[in-house]
Image 1 (cartoon, rainbow, N blue to C red):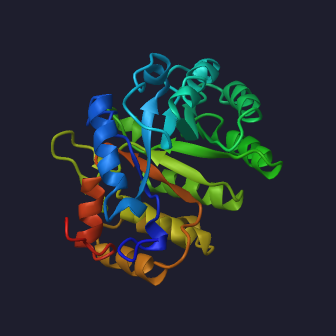
Image 2: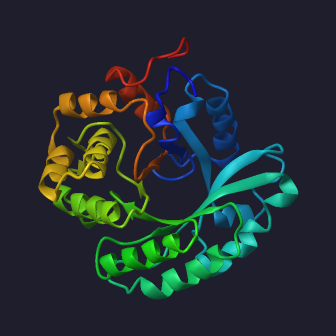
Length: 286
């Protein structure tokens, strides 16, 4: 582990360069990801996230060398994931994780969960994340995932914290509730969308208030230590960096509890925020 990236932040940010709003081409994203992997801040960076549709179309062939690790995003749906996964071994690529939505907002997530859990039983050494809408059937879906995880399946939850519509941004109380629900079930989770900066902030272009990943980190640390929903929500609401930085500094040498991490179309944006907050020691390249 690098002395410049503390253990608490290891693997916090997956490389989602090919997804909006970055929307990089896959060749450019693969090249840049290799740069991240060779950098002084490599410990901060998780795998390159790639759409299953691009893998199934052979778009990774010839772009990467043996030993390249990716996270597969199931934009093709659950039923087409095995087909996409079959393209990786011939190119020497390893899928560290698979992430896929199990339902749309307002739909019952249980049928999709059942299909995904059946798929997970046949995957060796791959973490599987079920993206669950923060709406109808949420708590029942978390119970199902927690039960499967307790039985030995490497499954966890994933939640959307932003997007192109206001309803995709959970309130601090809603996000606090789901963090505490995962805590109560000993269920790890990932987040996606909207976490562009460390601190909660208003985007002047869209008018949406975005959650800060620093807020989420402090809130999750507090939840893991037994904080109640109200206390967790306060940490998600604050725009004051001091309590967030203090919480992270106090636990910098510990493994991060519950929160696996989040995908960002820019690695350098969160890295820059972490350096400015003094949570990462900038290298010569910074």
